[in-house]
Image (tube, rainbow, N blue to C red; front, side, top):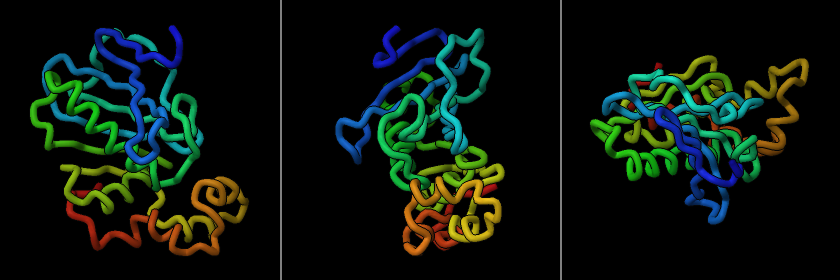
Amino acid sequence: QDDNQNQYSKYSDLIYYESSQTPGLRLAMTVRKPEKPSTIILTTHGWHMSISDFKEFDSAQSEFLRVEVDMRGRAFSQGKQDCSGYELLDVIDAVEYVKKNYAEYIIDPETVYFAAGSGGGGNAFTIACKFPDYFAHVSSDCGMSDYEKWYLEDKVGEFKDELCVWIGDISNKEAYRSRSGAHLVKNLCAPLC
């Protein structure tokens, strides 16, 4: 099937949706449907990853309505990577799309969870603080809480190139702080694990 089209199966869908911040920008997510109505759990992948190629799952494989957001500039989503910036708004757009189009799978549209690791875990820290009353619970597995500190302590240079592209030059302290959960923690309301 053409990769510009949504793909549907009994238990999972590959959905393309438009960014509310960048009109015309096509983003992608995989929606895994539970066997019975449940709550929503969102996730984003790690930095050097993307959502998996779409395949039909044999079962629901989740007690949640699981939404896997492909961050902008990755395999299925257009745009430029923007570490814990616009990609967070893309997550909110995904939630709002799911609330509207998957209502029959949702018990309570106001109960939304977010859980991710690595680069997605960095998103978890930041999204918990930038959208403090949006999520019922946020979980970060091995996420970066302070991008500036992480950049400065990267002795092998493994991530400096990406950070310069995805956030900007390290001299722009505000860009790094505004994306770092450690600097935004005063806004935190939801439980964070």
